[in-house]
Length: 304
Ligand code: GLU
Image (cartoon, rainbow, N blue to C red; front, side, top):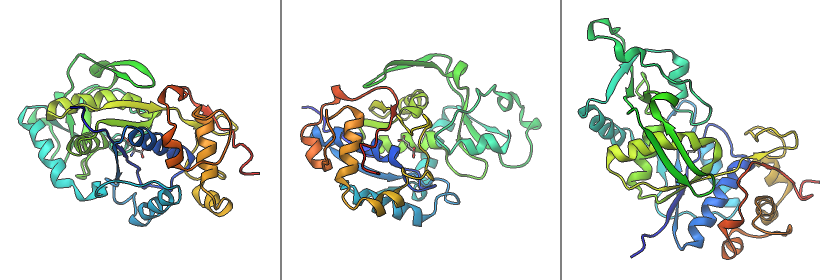
């Protein structure tokens, strides 16, 4: 029997959503629903100091406005430290974890999924116990010197040598906060997620997660990394920006179908602009039509 599709949307509530996030959520939703599957919501508030609950609730209201319906319980990463600890222990038992005392900037990068961190050269791995400082260190996992490869539904074949292109990576920061890479793998694995749909900027994270999926004994999901939306200057959309800002959208456009229809047209899913709800769109969703490359947003006049 074919396994049921389970997709998920996993926003980090360090700021309100922007159109690019809605676009990603939309494709994930359409993909799951068009296969008769489930779609889950997970709040990635690992770094509670940067992710206030009020922002998370604002995100939920925004998702509601666009007509997203989620299955099951909402998962809050801030409530799952004990679960992550168990998985960290399994890595520890395999002798794959060592403490790292490198800079704060590197450690902060661990919970920020976007943005590249430099290849780690293993400095702290070489410290003998007597050379280690007394303060608490972050935990790094030792990666194997082999190529991890997979075929992304949209981006095609992708491979990475974890040693050469990434290095041992952080799974828990020195202040005890678990890292994105570990949490996302544990949660996708435990929730039985079968497809991960997210922005193309996270493509290079997938090999690290595939490595962890294997270590934890989870079934691996398929990945689909969707294009990023670019504004008229060709820059990636960000949370604060004018017209891609949810406050602006919701106050100017009471009918969210106009935004969904506009995004669908931009994605190549429809051949002309017309207002559509998510559920209307899911009936005609065809993944083959989806664009692969980043999209310069044509607002189809809805903002003028
Ligand atoms: N939390 C990440 C974000 O807000 C997404 C992580 C993922 O989908 O794997 O961009």
